[in-house]
Image 1 (tube, one colour):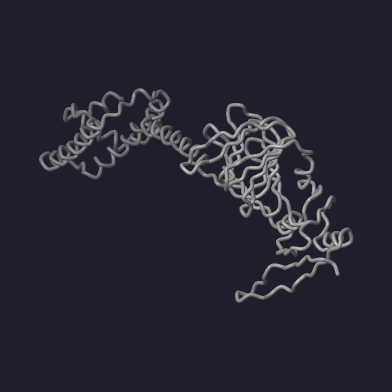
Image 2 (tube, rainbow, N blue to C red; image 1 turned 135 degrees about the vertical axis):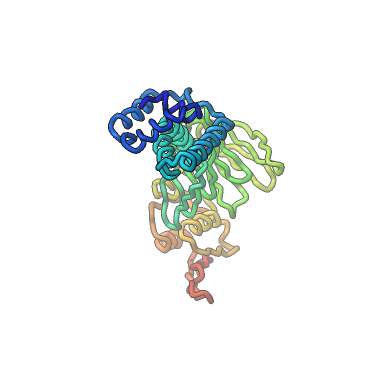
Length: 355
């Protein structure tokens, strides 16, 4: 059997004698070593450009196959041949399996490449990972670009699994210390809602808790650019920051202020320290509330008291004891109340003047 005769048959150009030769080959030799080698040879020599994408041609080929079935059906009736439609159908199936191996190989490659592309982009689409630093603990996150983020108590970071596009954008609620991997072609953007902090590769701290109307940025190394987010979604540049500068942006008024500072005061928290320099007791109370997830009320008559002190991973009541020793204040921890859902209210602490 030759490839040319098989092609001739499929193109409806065989004589009755040639059809009989083919049918005899089907019954006796179609699946022997020689026939398999014929299919294997076609597989190995197949080139992708040999396949023409011609839907009309495929339809015509199908019509020819149906026509062959009808011819052989008529031959069986008129010439009393023993060949049945089932044999012809089996032959067509076998020939198709041999002749279409290159086509299947081609389609397999195309589908596989498409799957790889789909998987690549689907992996890029799957993002929006979210990390929350629990109350009373700090968390370190390593991003896909090599940047490292330290999250402070009760802070939340939302970021993509893989950065795509022209920027490396993340969303922050709370406080974080950033060590950004250098990439001048893809700026790193910290979004806090109404203020964006943009860097190429630098070290800085951002404080942006939702219950505070002020977003604070402290630059340790490099440069960052600040921009406010307008109500229409556009951004307005607020200028550049230089190392050792501390910026405060008021989300209500849109005003920003800059000052030279000792930066370790603002970044010591990542090492378990709380540094206060001439800090009003109300500010101290606010930080303690975030650290320990408690409610603290400060009496009006002592709100002019300030503290210059450093706490290193001390528990809440030890800090309160130290405050009471250093200044004329006392505190009272109120009992927690059991709520209807079975949980308990936050611990409430009242700080007043020591009698």
